[in-house]
Image 1: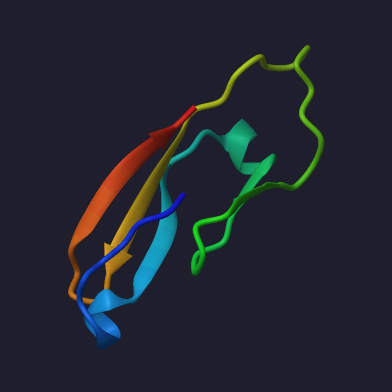
Image 2: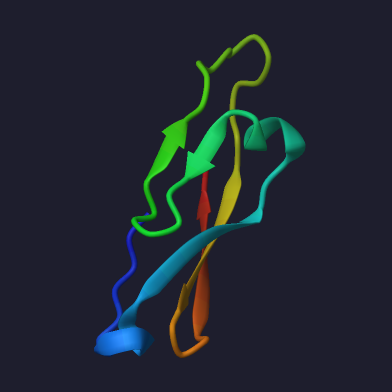
Length: 71
């Protein structure tokens, strides 16, 4: 996930977090809070679940935020 902010300094620094994630998905996906990169903690098992939906929030240093859905 990528977000941009035109502010400089502290107000332009972005932090990513899971806004909404199921317990099952939290055991599979990891989010880098600095870069927004989503990685797998373990292999996906499509017999267990064929899809996942994650809600990612990005917040800048000025306390403004936005949300993106990743499916």
